[in-house]
Length: 171
Image (tube, rainbow, N blue to C red; front, side):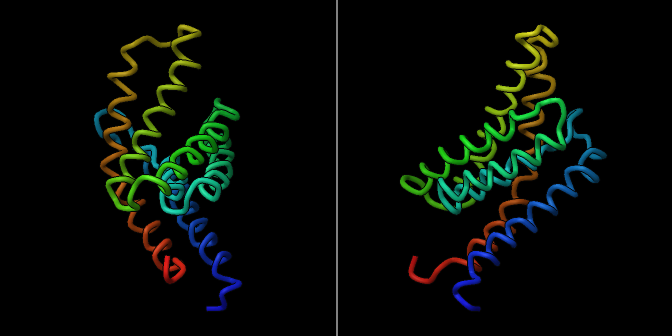
């Protein structure tokens, strides 16, 4: 492969995985209910990419994915975009400097990021305006994070494959 096209193919491959996850998230996963919730895989993809690729590339991928999340998950316009940008920048930078790029690091980072995102949305849109109480934490948020964690290997293995396939030799 021509070295000048390597980044194009790599990010095109990440985008293809993202498109497949979007289709899975919008068409298949709403039909799957475990513990009363369905998995929320879409916000995990950019965090996993950020762990593998680093802060700045992960943040840009998070920004784009956040825009898509905001378009698909109403009524939270702008929340996913800002959160995923900041979370991917932070997690990608930390993982580049301090953590290994393996399944445990990637999955834990993505699941913790989802938990913080869900908690932030719950605080901002449900607790403060008093549309939901603390019971939502135990009935919805905790089960969603747990169920999503079960599905996280479905994301890691294809993303890891893209990363390894397009990794520059010697790095």
